Image 1 (tube, rainbow, N blue to C red):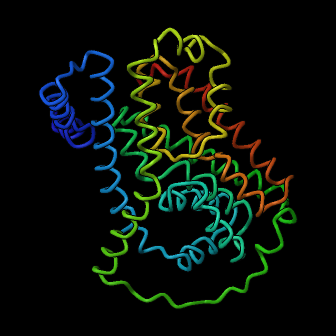
Image 2 (spheres, rainbow, N blue to C red):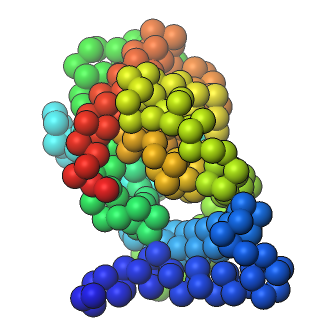
Length: 334
């Protein structure tokens, strides 16, 4: 193995941790990891520790980067661009913002209130929960780098196209009036010291961990159950490679859920291990993170029904296209 494989397996996949947890399960709990009970316990402990370690490190690093881009600076950067370049930058900036769709909506309101084009704000709104810098590392730690990079690329493309379509549709009149009614006060941004940035990043780690820990625990628990207790035949009958409706089911089942990518990753890992198509799994992850019911309820208070339905239709259609496409070419990634 080359040095990249060693680092990838030990730092991201944490094979050393998997072996330690295996020893724990066998010697402390007296369970064989090849049995359903032992395997579930190993999956739960290993994935939980691994995700929280990676999550803490990545949130700190991303927050440190984010400290250089306060809202006023971000608005100024986006305000200098127009057309597709502004949509691209809006989608990219969504990768360094909070990790769930509900927390992205207040920033969406702020950008709209600041006079940024509607299409740019929607590119941001789509990409912010769907794609972030942490998702690349976490996807690579569970699957591989090809899947991680492909997920991020298609997520950004969906955000750029979705925002562009909305921007070209002249739908500004379908945004709630209060979004544009708040007076903008220009505040000069003071330069942060290194200690300020470290304190900000540490606070973000605690804040986000507090917000997502329950969803991660639930996701790991569901993943452990799927991985060790649900027969492959049952999952294959519903979501197998040969089922044309698998992507549809995965997308629409995910809509009522509320989680972020960190909570969906263990479930995705277990589904892939059971033979579910890569595109089906990606569709599930995207629908959960971008189209959760709570975020749609919040968005309904910000935009009128026509714009909400157009947004919903664009994102669902894009997720379905991505899902079916990846199922067709999944052999290139696994």
